[in-house]
Amino acid sequence: MSDTMTDPSGRTAQADDGAAPYGQGQHGQEQHGQGSFFGRRKGHKLRSHQSDLIEHLLPRLLLDISSATPSDLTKLFDPPVEAVRLEIGFGGGEHLIAEALAFPQVGFIGCEPYVNGMAKILSQIESHNIGNIRLFAGDAAEFLAWAQPHSLARIDLIHPDPWPKKRHWKRRFVQDATIEAMARALVSRGEFRFVCDIADYCAWTLAHLTRSPEFAWTAEKSSDWLQPWANYTMTRYGRKAEREGRRAAYLRFRKNS
Image 1 (cartoon, rainbow, N blue to C red):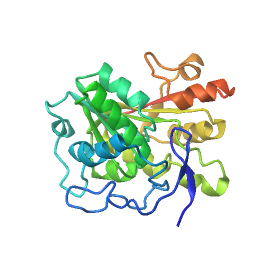
Image 2: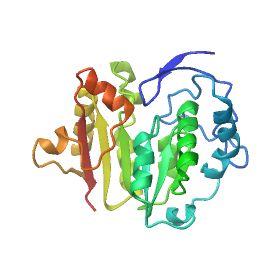
Image 3: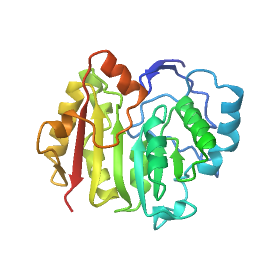
Image 4: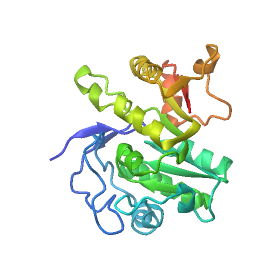
């Protein structure tokens, strides 16, 4: 069965339900459940080197949530890091790579079910010799359920699929259940950061987060959400949105305790 979808970087991909080996754990169990995962896995045909990276480098970096949850996520990294952050749907990987290079003492987990996005970030990890990134090829909600409480310092969701049709709103990542899951996984005073150029999804996210007793919106003035935070790395999709006249909102929410 074939279909099309838009990945977190704004590309249209051809569905491929036959990509079963991608995203399996070390013991062969399929990591992709239902949950909030509605994307397809494979788009354009991979180049030879990308396929080689998927086959040989990805297994060394891929998290296996069929195994027991480590008591401390910092120990997933060698050498151990001071804190761990999660980026959900990293698309082409521009933001995740920049953050990992800027903060070598922090461990980064990138969640991306889209094969081509995974291949692109593997190429950048290889070329920059980055050691503080681990990858999860599945549903971020499943990862959050697997992670120990109070194990993440920050969660980033940048230019997600907005699912604009009302009948698809239940597919948006930001839901009451996932907000609770993020609150469980974040450390005290940890942050959820959200970037989106679709006004309806920004309003949706603001409404859901501000009614949650677990989070507080950090904005004090309009520039706090109209402008990127310091040292923010603009993604390719973000630059495209700006060229097309769509202005993004940069929302930051701090866990209350």
